[in-house]
Image 1 (tube, rainbow over the protein chains, first blue to last red):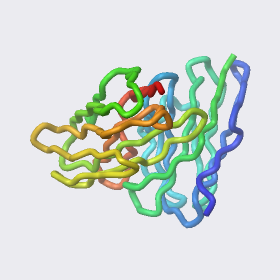
Image 2 (tube, rainbow over the protein chains, first blue to last red):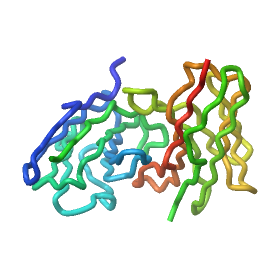
Image 3 (cartoon, rainbow over the protein chains, first blue to last red):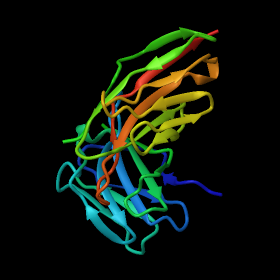
Image 4 (cartoon, rainbow over the protein chains, first blue to last red):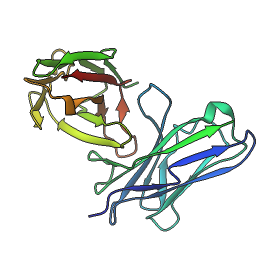
Length: 114
Length: 113
């Protein structure tokens, strides 16, 4: 079946612009996670949804970052007033389990802020 | 807090060599442990996992054993191929229902023919 998809795959934004990154999880998956992966580093947890409820947003680096999953399927990560330090690959993962021991990752969106 | 430490790369080996990538962790409770692989231009793929002490995860010739006494989960393969060239990430999940995976920094493996 279809895996996790993310769009766009690449995004270039000028500093100060707002961006929106989309994640389509595997159909029926309860849990959805967002991660940020800086160049040469491992992914770092940003936020977690169980269905439409955002249960953990402790990893969001600032109040410029906002995520939503209004109908419990597609999720959007929004970054307002982008800064150069926001340049990274943003990964989405989903899991059929609540809590997500088995996470399936999308290909990521590479964001470059100029 | 939880953390994962894995050996720095790049690791360069010849084809058919034996591979070990070290991974140690710090976590509260009894985490589940994972190895993920990232091939060039692709997303993270789960390679193997172990959910309790002394479990051995295995897949595609790779193995790792959950060692609680040494808090380790080293990745091994007896004979590597050029196609194994990728970045390998060790990760843990502590549970609790709301936290994500905690990853190491990744080890870049290069296999030369």
